[in-house]
Length: 138
Picture (cartoon, rainbow, N blue to C red):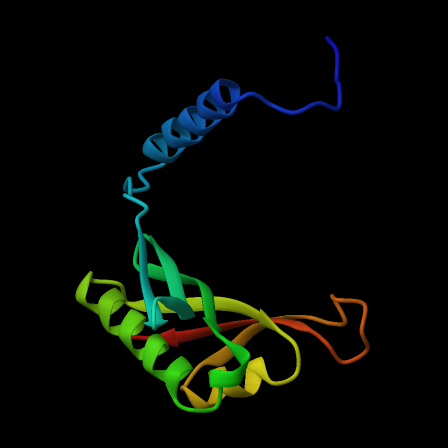
């Protein structure tokens, strides 16, 4: 038997994921369809905002929320977030979660009704700049 540091092929990775699914089925975990949903905010053909996330059983994982810097603090981020939350709820998702960092981002999510569930202190090698997991029931 050899252990090596190398890239795994897409076929090898697919085989591993298939085995994970077999284990889940054996343990009675319902199979899920993972789908990405997203909204793009455009102005004059330019992307100025974006929100995206994926379904995970009854949870929706908010992977991205971005508004171009000069357009921030005008309610666009809240609008995009509200739209993706409504979409997630319409799909039967019961909760939404995300990971964020920095000093202003956590305040934004807290104003939107999110509560922290985990904090990785000083993760980004800047004192006081934590990566925080936030969640919200839909």
